[in-house]
Image (cartoon, rainbow, N blue to C red; front, side, top):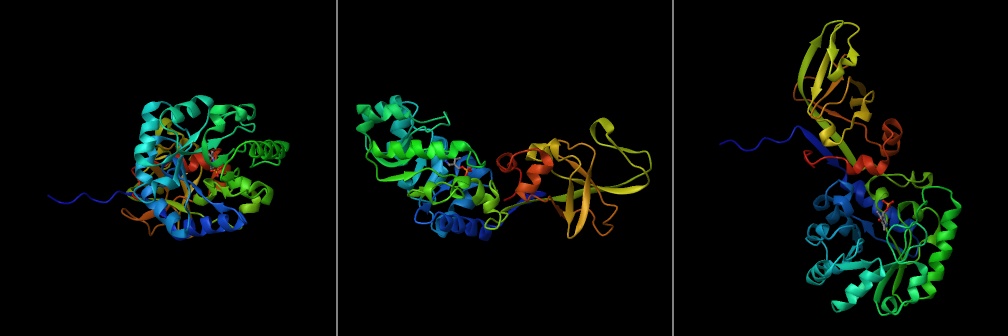
Length: 345
Ligand SMILES: *Cc1c(COP(=O)(O)O)cnc(C)c1O
């Protein structure tokens, strides 16, 4: 039997850029050190590809959202370096935390109680300073069940760090107040955008995610962050259209004259959503517009400008995240996390 042929779509990862992005964010964090948000499979790019690079760059603090994400990360780093943002929902999850050695982020009085009933031990604590997502409220800090926790990192999370909002300073004040009221080893407030808000926001540890993977949530970061992910696809078929021929579902493109087109082996099932309609692929310096609607597994492109391209040749989708976000009306976060698992990484 012949071996499994390689996929006809690839997500090339610039590991050097990923490493450089972490080092840049660590440097911008001043006297604080940068950790890394590696939840959602490193924002869709792949834990097994990204976590070793971040570790080798010097990162020691890794944040996931779910307990199901722990196992893949601790194949590459020490369990005690992994924090689970959603905390323990029940005794089962608390027991799993102890078994693996990953640290829960305690997000409520109920979770604090659950953690202590299971034996307590080191944990992190999230205090809500205004986003009203997860975290104990500032008033709850004085509760004995919270005061009894062995808090390693006291965290809070900014709601509007990517904007020049008055809320940033309000959350900073609320966090500074919280810090006074509970014992902890270290404090952490800033995500990627928060790092660019200045040293007041850095405390001991920052938690960039998006910017590690090439996202630019604030203009101050633009000169420091490099693109990491490059989606590429093979042309699996070329065709000749006659004037008047249509392309794709609902026949939204009609050829104005005879033209040569290529069919690419990727589509919205891979995360190249319909909102990419009207955008273009590239080959070297040439622009290859998308024709008609994006299908689940296929995209048709105009090859009029590129007679040299044929079946089996590869083309690139420009995936500079700030530009792509403008072009598609998706956020930079969504552009990363929608990328599907048919890509060879
Ligand atoms: C996702 C997340 C981060 C990382 O945020 P970015 O905006 O991607 O840098 C940091 N902290 C918490 C609590 C998060 O949920």
